[in-house]
Image: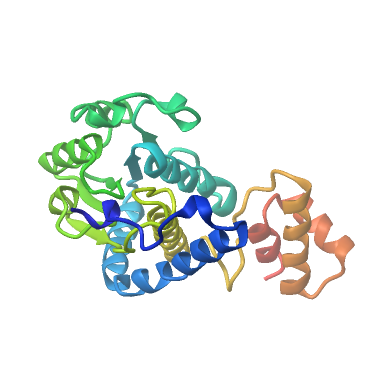
Length: 266
C-alpha cells in the first residue's frame, strides 16, 4: 500500500472534541517541513533547469488533477501580480479543464492522453519545462502527459508523496516528499497538499529571484493592481531611496513600477 493511502495514526475521529481534532491535525502538519528539508537538493536541481530554460525564453507548465491541479493553477496565477511576468510564462492546467477548478469532473484524471492534448493547445516545445503534480504518483492524466513530453525532449519534473511511483519514474527530476499517513486516511488534500504547496512556493519563488525579479528582498516588479499593492510599493520606494511618502508615491505613479522608480534615482 502507498504511503498516502496508509491508515491514519488516529482512531475514532468522530468521537474527538474539536480541540483534539485541531491538535491532531496541527501535530501532523508540523511534520511536513521536515519531510521537505530532506529533498531540498532535488528541488534545487529542478529550479536550476527551470531558470536555464526560462532565460532562453521557455515557459513553465504544471499539470495535475483535483487538489494537485488546483495548486498548480494557484501558483501559476500568482506569478504575474507578484513578480511582473507576463501571463503565459507560467501555466497551470487541470484535468477536466477550468470547470474542474471549482467542481470535480468525473474520471477526468483517468484519461492518459488528455494532458498532452491540453499541452498542445499551448504549443509546448523543448524550450519549456513540465512539472506533473500528483500526491499518489499514479494519476493517469499526469503520467501520460509526462510520458509524451519526454518523447518530445521536454524536461520534466514531478511532485509526489509516494516513493517508487510510476510518476516519479517518468520524471527527469522527481521530487518525492514522503509526509506519511494523513490525519483522515487517504485525504491527500491535507499533508500531501500542504507539501505540494510549499514545494511549489519554493520552485516559483526561487526561480523568480534567480531571474532577477527581486531586488534585496523586495518584489520590485509586482503589478500595481490594487490600493494595497500601491501602498506597499510606495513604502518600498521610501525605504530604498529614503524619501517621504508623497515623493515616493509620485515616483511610483510616474514610472509605473517599483523597479523603475528606484532606478530613476540611481
